[in-house]
Structures are given as structure tokens and as C-alpha cells.
Length: 231
Image (cartoon, rainbow, N blue to C red; front, side, top):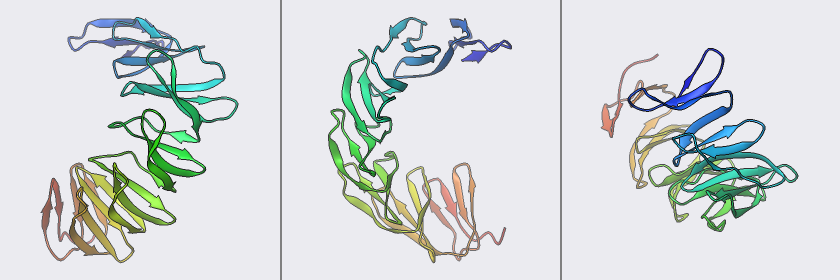
């Protein structure tokens, strides 16, 4: 993707050849082989710039990008969200206060002010019982119930107990939870790797997480945890 000084947007291929000529239309990134174009109306183009889909639904405030064959949309009148397929047909009715993109067949969905996860037919696979739910990563979703955080798998089974004050980091298959007096490290199978006393500062360096002023040095996945003194 490139932009000219006049604000026009176009696309280059990997060889630097222009494959979509610059235009004043707002062309977004490609996902699922399509890019969303927003101007006076929204439509979707392929990697040659050809219009593939021009949704004709009424009462739509906004469309989003396609992921796993479906794109979410929000209605003007109710502010509720659902999904269309690449034919522009509504496949999940706009019954939800919020829906995320689909990831491995599931999307986070908010109904009656509670979050769960739905399939591509709009059925809850993980019941809407959480106050917050993050997209699945490495097979786990970090969820919140009340003021406590934990993690569940794609079937809704609790993998990390919902007992933590906050999630500090979830990266490269490692979860770090803050529990006031400790930082607890888990892998994606829910196994506790280490537990370090709180009162330490945590610094993130790209793929390395360092717990400072700890008593031991550890290597966990791509992370290094150890005694590095005060910041």
C-alpha cells in the first residue's frame, strides 16, 4: 500500500509494480483476499482492484473487514452487530452489543452486557457470563468476571483460575498475571511456571520479559526472567 502527496492510495505487489492504481477512495488493508473501500458507500475489492462485493443492506452504520469468510457490521437504528458473508448475505443476525472478528471459528460477542464466544451461526459456544473477554491466542482467551481475571480454552473450560487482579502480559505462549502480592507465570496449558513476589518492576524488551529484583534467573519460552536490580 502506498499514498501519494495528494492523499491518493494505491497498492504495489512484492516486485514494486502498481497493481491497484491510486485513488482518492479510502482503501483499507487486505484480509481474507479483500480490502474494504470507504467513500460515500462501502465496498470490497480484490487484489486487482476489481469490486467483488457492494453490500446493499439497509440501516447499516458501518462494515468491517473480512476474517475467516465473514465481516461484522453495525446497524444505525439499534447499534447492534452481526455478520455478512462474501455474498453480502446476513449469516449472523445483528443481535449483539459487540462482536469481534472471527478467529479459529469463534468470535467474542456481547449480549445482555456479558461476553461469551459464538460460532459462525451466531450460537454461543462459550456462554456469555464474563464482564470482558479477549480474542483467543494460542488456544486461550483471557476473561474477566467481576474484578478477577483468568483464562479459558475454546470449550469454555477454565485453564487459569479467575482469581487475579489483572493480566500483565500474554505473549509468545506465556501469560503473566498480577495478583497484588505476586506475578504468576503460566503456559498455555495452565501450568504455573514461576511465581515472583510483587513490588518488582517489569520491563518488556520485544520478545524478552524481565522481572527486576527477582531472586533467580529463569528462561521461559523466549522470555528471560531474572535479577536485574531496580530501575
